[in-house]
Amino acid sequence: MALEDAANVIDEAFTRKDLQGNAYEATYAGATSFLRRKYTKDLVGVDIAVTGIPFDCAVTNRPGTRFGPRAVREASTLQSPDAPYGWDVDPMSEFNVVDYGDLAFDHAKIWAFPKALQNHIAGILATDTACLSIGGDHYVSYPILKAHVEKYGPLSLLHFDAHSDTWVDDDPDRIDHGTMFYKAVKEGLVDVERSVQVGIRSTNADNLGVPTIDAPEVHRIGPEAVVEKIKSILGDNQTYLTFDIDCLDPAFAPGTGTPVWGGLSSGQAAAILRGLAGINVVGMDVVEVSPQYDTSGATAIAGAHVAVELLCLWAHHKKFGV
Image (cartoon, rainbow, N blue to C red; front, side, top):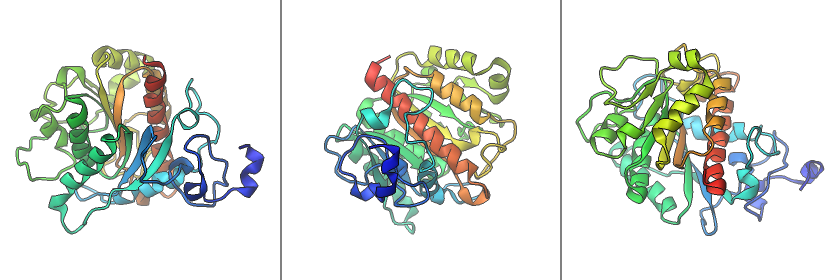
């Protein structure tokens, strides 16, 4: 399909027959699946599925991330139909990528949400399909991580964020987007010494020994050195990558629940993610996009761009193995 065919194409999310190839469809019209991928629950032959987690009941500040998956999907339609810039792999043309839709759950039974999400992701992984999740507040990473650990065993955690999310919380029933990585470490889900947090710029009494490259260090040493440090820590470990959009400075991503100034620029984030080509990413998410706090749509656009970079990271290792 070529660009001139766009005049005759609409609603590819429902009408497309193939699972590969870029979509040439008017950005302002049609069904807004992620990157116009096919909406399907059939994962036979699928390499990676994108799924939305519209949940924001664990926030400590401004709610609204339940609208994140829809906003990121819509923003993804602004992406170029050409191969992703800065990469030597095109996941949309070289792999079978689909939109699996959103997690369905009872919003009035919050206590049942964690297991519902864990089962949702486990069902995808059981078909040997990789998964990119779009939140949703950052708590969602915890049940998602559990599902991945069930399949792969303890993982390295690559965590982009303004906050460490390791506040002490020994109550297994609490659902909080600031404590889930404390629980993940205490439960042995992550390999602490081979994990790393990037972009942190808020105080926490204890990050539980997880190596940290805070935002001031990112600014001081630059993306290339950050990439080198991350790779030296992760090695070839299987890695779960989570990207909280508030890792970016509010100038680039104002639409989030707990914004903190002094963060990464979108250019720094892009350079770091592209520089990480070769790491062994087995699961990933983009979280904390709250579109109602951003009248320009810049945060959702940033979230969509980050999601594409994560797809490319996964595809690069899948294709080249290094």
